[in-house]
Amino acid sequence: MLNTWGDVWASDSDIETEGSQDLVKLREKHNKRGYLDGIVSSKEEKLQEGFNDGFPTGAKLGRQVGAIMGILLGLCTRFGNEDEELSKAYLDAQKELRINKVLSKSIFDQNFDLQKKHPLITKWTDIANIYCEKYHVSPV
Amino acid sequence: MDFDELLNLEEQYYQEGFCEGQNENIKQSFLEGKQYGLQVGFQRFVLLGQMEGMCDVIESYGLHNPILEKNIQTIRTSMKGIKMNNDDESVVEFEKKFVKLKNKFRTILITLQRLNKDKKDGVLTFEAFEDVSRAIAGEIRGFVENEDTNKKNSTQDQAQSW
Image (cartoon, chains in turn orange, blue):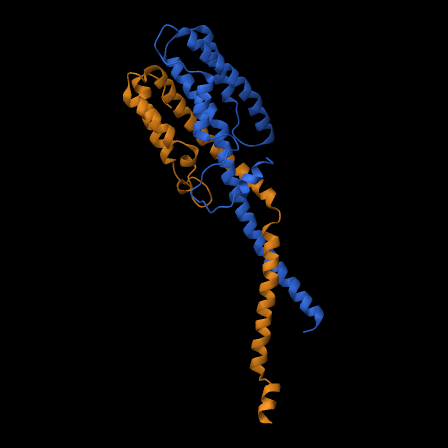
């Protein structure tokens, strides 16, 4: 008899625990549903905003890389046959200044901003300028 | 707890989740867009920079050819006014100027070939010149390798509509 009563009347603390566990589950379920809906909402607008924010930096880097390549290519076309080092520099630049290297995540901070001068651009500007001086081209 | 209370609670939890999701989405989408903006900006300006650099070199050849010098000057002047952002007017202006710049540069290379006919210098065609920038930057809208291979490719899908 006592056992039966015990089963039917659970203690207050039991009820509370059971109740809050249900609430946790309920919360989990609906919170997750909301989260999933929230994460796919208004995506386009923010993508465009980010795009416009990143574009000028990318453009500047692209233009700098292009200028370096243009100089090395131009000099190679004329002096490449006799200047082995120049030819090699041009080939190396083609590899090292590829877009995936220049825009590598490790060079940017977590917000995709550049905190200091771009190391690859700095390196290759210096190299290009050595040949600019050698062949009397105005420096980069 | 009655039925209405339960519904309210469900709604409240849903809203909480929605806000969390939206905030995360805003941050992630912005960065995703930014990364893609960096790529496209780069791709759009590589060839322009390359023409700029090549013009410097051609001038140093000291060929004293008036047509060549005039064309280089035209390219220089035209490049000065180019805005490097993604505003609508800037993009329209860029597209317009870029076609002209490429044509001008093409004639420069042709002049150069003619002047260097008798020399043993390598011949540079505009196609070969363009290939160099393509090798550097990939095709416009092309997929760009990323160290983070787990990253979802939704940016690329987005790209199609831009």
